[in-house]
Structure formats: C-alpha cells, structure tokens
Length: 387
Ligand SMILES: [Zn+2]
Image (tube, rainbow, N blue to C red):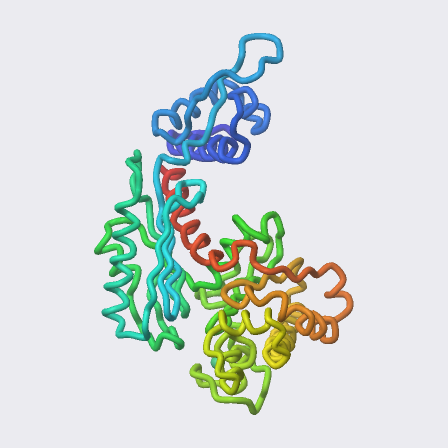
C-alpha cells in the first residue's frame, strides 16, 4: 500500500528508525550497507535514518572496518553512554540501587539496610539512595532517562503499591511521588516481575521464550514470561504464586488465606524452622551447612521439598522451558536442589517434565534490580522511537 498522507509517512519513518536503531543495538559494530542487508531497507533510507540517529547522539561512527574490495566502510556503534538509568530493588529490609548505561551495564551501585519502618521513613531513604546514584552519573546527552523500581507487593498500572503484606504498606502512590520529586519517568513493578525481566534480558533466561522466575526471599513471588513477554494479567496482578495454597488447613497467612506456599518454602520459613538451632540468618545457616551441620542441611532439604511441590504445580500449569529460582535463597542452591528436584520429578506430569530445566538465577541477587533498570531503559526507547 502506498502511503497517502504525511501522517503515514511520518509513521513509516518512525517504524524504520526503530528498525535501524534495533539493528545497531543488536549487531554493532556494523556498516550502513550491512544494516540495509539485514533490514531490507534501501541504502538511501538507511543512510538518512542513521544520520538522524547520529544527530540525536544515539549512534556513533567509529574507524573504518574491513573492506570487501572497495572503499572501507565506516562502522556504527550504539552510543550506550548517551544516557543513564536507575534501577532500584526495594526490599522488605533493604534498598539496592544501580546506575546503568543504556545497554544495562552497571556503572555504580549502592545498598542500604531498612528496618521495618513507617512509609515516610522508607521514602526518605529511597530518595537519598536515588540522589546518590544521580550524582554518580557521568555527563551525557540525555542525562538520567528514568527510574525503575521493583517492590515486594501488588502494583497497579498507575504505579501505585496497593498492598505489600511483608512491608505492611497499603495504597502508596510511589510512581507519582517519585515523578514529582525527580522529574523523570518512573516505572514501578512487582519485584518478581522485575527479576523475571532481569534474568530474561541479562541472565539465565536469555533467548528462552517460556520461563517462570521464582523469587524466593522473605516471601515468594513469581514472574511469568510467556512467548518472551511478561504476562501481567488483566490488571497487572498476575504471579502471586507465593499465595498458592499448598496446605489447605495450614498456617494463617498475612494475605488472609491459610497454608500459602511462602509460609513453607521462603527464607522466613527457613528462619522460623531454624530458631531452635540458635542460628538467626541465612548467612549463618549457609555457613553451618557448608561446615557439615546435618541438622541445618536437613532444614534446607525440607525447604527444598516444599519449593519443589510449588514448582511442580507451576510446571503442570504453564509447561515452561525453564523455571529460574532467584533472590536470596538462590544462594542455597547446593542444599536445596536434591530435595527440590526429587519433589518436582515426583509431582510433575511426565510430558511436562520432558524438556523442563530448573535453573538458578545467573544474576544472583541482582535479578530484580537489573530488571528494574531495564524497565527504565525500555521506557526511554519506547519514547525515543515514537518521537
Ligand atoms: Zn498468603
């Protein structure tokens, strides 16, 4: 179809610009001729779009590449330092922050402990953490392009935290508060969704279409990626599998249900069960397991079984390629794995088990904060491509 109006032409130009930019981001260093070859756009169009991208500082030219006969072509690079983004993992008892460039490379980081506190105090600490990262950003064309935040709770599509049971937060308009303060776009999502995004973009889940990320920390949350897209449900609330009922007459949960998965398979569950040993942190328990303490090893094994039971349910529902276990408990991989795998083998349907792989987060405890930063970058690109 022939474009009829300037509106059509402008739209086509936007689409083509975004195709060219993606091609540079994915394949750099490369020449204009190679972009033309890879995208099917003609050379004149590519040249003009590349010039626009150079003018807007998103693409850089570097010295000539190898010639295949004639004049040596100039190679193009994505200018990943044209702007910077901030990622925050707002935990129940910590705030982890990253400053990243537009490729998601980590430039600076910070960490603050949080005691269970009033919302006001948490917001103050959060603001300080962000301010500190902003100060560390090098000079750049676009400056800070956005802030992404993963939070341990249910977030609506307006970036309002509706409910964060482990933090005892209700209805906090975090996106609005932070946009007022920092004057840049802020993206808020559940920490498990952020973790899923982080692992899919930079970690164990790269190039895997169907993956379930299970964040095992103080509670349990899950991020569901289907056909390479984060599945958010009709209101953005999907993935609360930590509240899957696995013990129908079990312990009461802060969510109002009984017998929720996270009461039996989280870091909190481990610490509760470990009380008689006198060991009070995951770090101490890991050390004891390492030192051969059989009692502690069997505690991990018990948690592993419960993890496996919940994962088996997830596998039977979603038939994923991989399940990725992340957040703090991924550090106990060695001690959780045997019992967890046994429970999964015993409880999944054989067809579902066939191609299934269980992995631990490659980014370790950075899955959520890297994913949060990616939200900010991806929001920036969406905006740039629609200019
Ligand atoms: Zn619950």
